[in-house]
Each structure stands twice: as C-alpha cells, then as structure tokens.
Image 1 (cartoon, rainbow, N blue to C red):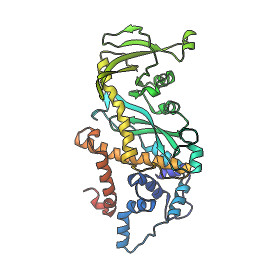
Image 2 (spheres, rainbow, N blue to C red; image 1 turned 30 degrees about the vertical axis):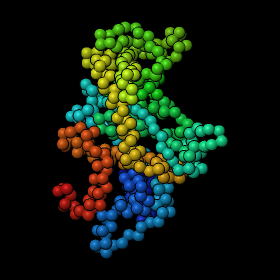
Image 3 (cartoon, helix red, strand yellow; image 1 turned 180 degrees about the vertical axis):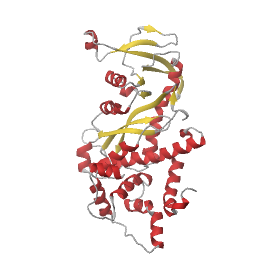
Image 4 (cartoon, rainbow, N blue to C red; image 1 turned 120 degrees about the horizontal axis):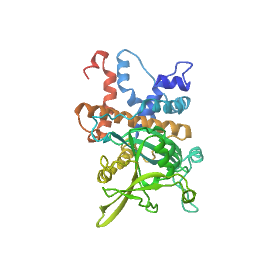
Length: 378
C-alpha cells in the first residue's frame, strides 16, 4: 500500500484521522460488507482495534459521512489501480488441481456490466444502455472486461470503460497480460481475426467458439475428426492474397438440457494442432472451463456485492476507485481459498466462496485483538 501511495503521490502533508492506508483498506472492505453504510463498514473494519484502544484509555472519534467522502476524493483512483496491478497475478502451480491442461494454464476472457448510481456525472461519463423511444434505462452502467485463471477464479487483469465501448475493443487491449504457456478461452461474441492474431503474437494458445454465421473451408481432415482451415481478416483481403492464419476447427453437438431431442452444434477453433497431445474430444470436454468466468462474475456481483445497485459512488472517479476495491476484495477472498486448498491438497474450486467470505468478516476484528506473540498460533 505504501508503495502504491508513494507512486501516485497522494501522501498526506499533515496527520489525518483517515490516513491514506486506512482509506485503501476501507475501499476494499466496502466489498466485504457491501450492504452496510460507509460508517458501519469503517466500524467493522477497526472493531478489534477500537476495543484495544478503549483498554488503554484512547478514543477515536468516527468521521462523519462527508469526512469519509472527502478522504476518498483525496485518495483518488490511481492508488487502487496501482495496488491491483502490483499485487494480482495468476496463482496456480503445477500441483493445483484443474488449473492446467497438458501443461497449459487455462485462462478465460469475458465481460460484464455493473449498475452505478443515477447521477448526472455517472451518466455523462459511462452512459446508459439503449431503451425504447421516450424512455431511458434506470441506471448508467460501467463495462468491465476481465481475465480469469479458470482453476482458481483469480481475476489477474481487468479493464473498465463506458458502456458504449464494446467488449471486443477492450478484450484486445486486455491481451497484454496473456503469455506463452497459457491456453486462452473465449466465447463466440469475442471471435475475430484480430483476436486470433493478437493472441498468437503474444505466444499464447487459444480455444474459442465460432459464431454460426462464420464459415471455414475444410482444407485438411485430421484423424480425430477435426480439420485444418485458415482465417482471414476479411473476404476482400482474402481475395488480394493476404496471409492467413492456420487454425484447427473442432465441430461437435451436445444435447439441449431443456429439450433432450434437440442437438446444439458447437464449433471451436484452436491453435493446438497436435492431435496426439490435444485430441478433439479432450478440447471439446475442456471447453466447459470457459464457464468458470461466469461463476467468477457471480461471486463478485452476487455474493460479494449483493446490492440493488452494484456500485454506490456518485462520481466517476470514485466509481473507478470502488471497482478496483471490489476486484481487490475478490482477490483477497480467492487468495485465502487458494492457500487453504493448497495446504489441504484439494481443488480451490471445491471450497466455498461465501463460507470463506464469512470467515474473513469474523477474523478481521479477532486478529486485531491479538497480541503479536499470539499471531503464530492462529
């Protein structure tokens, strides 16, 4: 925290009742106690310390609501952004159950939207969804695109933007965090030549679903039922002889869970051309890992937040600040789950997110009451 504060140059020039480090903790704690007021969140955050101060005759006067707001405005959004990018990394190792496919780390990219308060500034900066003529959407929205490690649900990179900017645009920029040794999965809404080209240029392998209207010519049949084809940036450039990218296409059908007699056709493209190491059936079965990103979104939008309006800030800069606090809160819970799962030699996804969240809420004041020599025991 001190490094992030120093890099963004928001150190206090005088002593305050809400120093920058405490405000950073408060913003993260807003996601842990999302249904409480700001003052109650602060009280929960320092509950154990308050008891210790009373015993030695000290008293700390809780700031009013406007004081907390001013402290958040002084801090700004840069500290939280810096802290997020400084801390968050993929965590799975070779022993982590379900995190790798034949040595490749499975990561997923997707996007979601968060409702933000209906203020003039939020509406101007982030925008609203479209609605029928003569009406308007109830809330402005901020779009969030995330990169998730499928085996741990760690969100290791994220970008937010106004609602009007599509997921594809931000997803391309988010590829800054993919590396060699990863297998990136995406849904059909993110399919594009640019997505494939950018992923390949980073040395990362991919497995993505194809929209129904996109056609691929069968250039060579493979023994496992898949076939090789080529992807071009556009039909015009294809006719001009633009250099294509070689892809492997996997086609299969699954039963519709709502109507067992109906078959749903899936088509995937991948850069994994070795049919011995990555047969078509294996990749078709593993593609369900893409849905782990939906479970991750559910964790921080439903279980971590659980609010009627996802974000509580009325101003755009504090919205960005709060979203990074939410991402750091989710990271804190998931990091504890990963550590517990590693020590117990079980898959991180087998442990309860809401149960761990409850443990953290109860543990914060208890640890604050401990003496330094007691910490090792706990």
